[in-house]
Length: 219
Image (cartoon, rainbow, N blue to C red; front, side, top):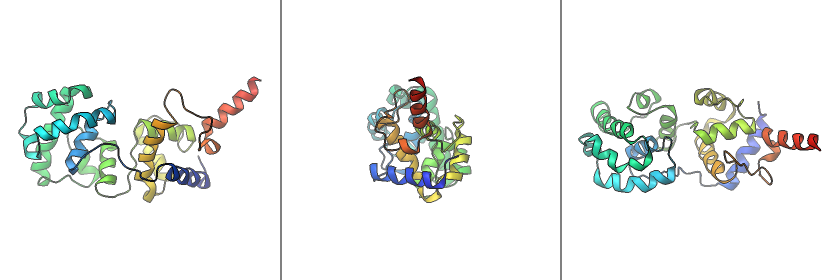
């Protein structure tokens, strides 16, 4: 696994590139972030941000979501994909927050993952962004990039990656680090064509080093 010194260099380099490590999903209320993250499954944050203003205007309160017809909710989120299932989850989740938690988004992993449509990735993001707790949000960018860097062993299992990140990334850095992974994954370390040449993390990246070694061996 990556040395503590290398991990520290990676963290500090990313801080320099992205000083404001903010979630790209737009929201005003805690439950709106929860719902937006659900909509972002297999969908881009950009698309979600285009959909949620009209959705939240039509259903401006948690109570209005709880009373909504999932079919109508689905029409507002159709372009996010898998809209029928997501719509059912939003309505059910609103009902559960009202019935179980007095209308407030809960602040523990156990309570969050008991809500409809909420998995560990979503729960971690809420714990980090809403409650300021250590949070390891293992989305596709984080899983891909930490594997390439060698911070994790390349596993694609989010739970396994989260476990490994908890061993490497200091808790106080965790939430911001994961947000920076998303930004870096969009800008530089893309899924299909990573921009390894000139990458500011290449000196500490296992994948970049392997590519250089392979290129030399091919000559």
